[in-house]
Image (tube, helix red, strand yellow):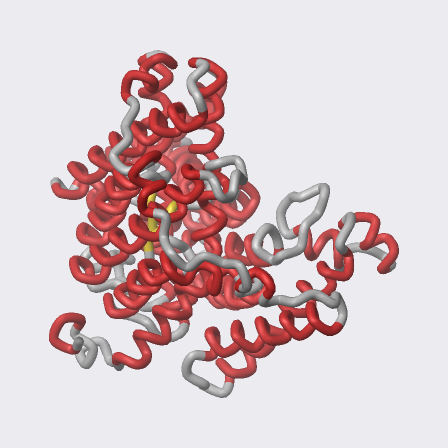
Length: 475
């Protein structure tokens, strides 16, 4: 392990890296069940659901393995949140436009993912994506990590907390639970299942404070221990106060993967004929949209998480960026071939980094756990969402520390960073936040007589984002 991943050179140990990999996996294990639910209209038990479930595990493992061995970085890959929701909308639109069945339309949608992955593979091999990363202005780079931190806080206090609101929206636990004047008003705001929600909120904060106390005492694996402690509290609360068995789902659970379902529905099933029934312009537009969101989500996650981990130089550049971007491209092609939406670097990798992970051994551990989950998915499914939220909130708070590196007296740094801080958590897209930051940076430089200080690539990227935000939407 030391020879392959240079553990001693990076000042780490195999034990630390393995614990970090397990921590990363536990914070993102929700994607294993959530992704097939999103992509198949929650049709659990169907052949397509089983195929997407296995594709999620396999493609995530493939991309993460490339990250481990090619880039030697502790980042994990999986179907990107937001991109999978967009993919589900695209599939539904293909159904309505063409009249194809959902499975046939799903197979048509996989063609877009395949094209996107191949485009990224070529761009990565020829260092085009690397040049794009280097063209991002300093203010935007410095703002990425804290903006992702706020996004993690939003995920932790929002959709991942196990607390649900009829109104939805950013940070809705803080708004509907703590923002209510009385418990009765909170109950009205948050709808049914209030007792379950109270247990989730208590679990979330118990896990957060446990992690913080252990980290303050320099306890190794504090994030993982805090998540396990929070899970134990939640299970006990379910049994004592809600009178339910937290392990009931394990009784009739099947631990055998449905490879035949994947072979029947998703494995190398590309329906190009069905795809082009929606029209050439639509196909090109959708492909470009997927490419842009994926590219800047990945770049943002890599730069932001690497900055937090101290893996960048004084210019904010990360070594082995080409190999890391290549892992994203290979994972996306593997996802298309097996049957899932775009594979991208997961922001939850920051939890493993905070647990001490700094080499590819962390990623290798996470990849092995993804493969094992094909056989152990019922066990991963019983980890409560509120426990994983504890880790996401904690890491988000730490990533906000990147704000101290921003010179707020320099508007070319302050303006893009501030806009990204607002845009990322509200839009749920790292890529859109970066796009808004780049546009604001370019506009500021142009109208203050410093247009020559902006690189050509930055102008091109900003123009593409303007087209995407306004012209394509308007069309």
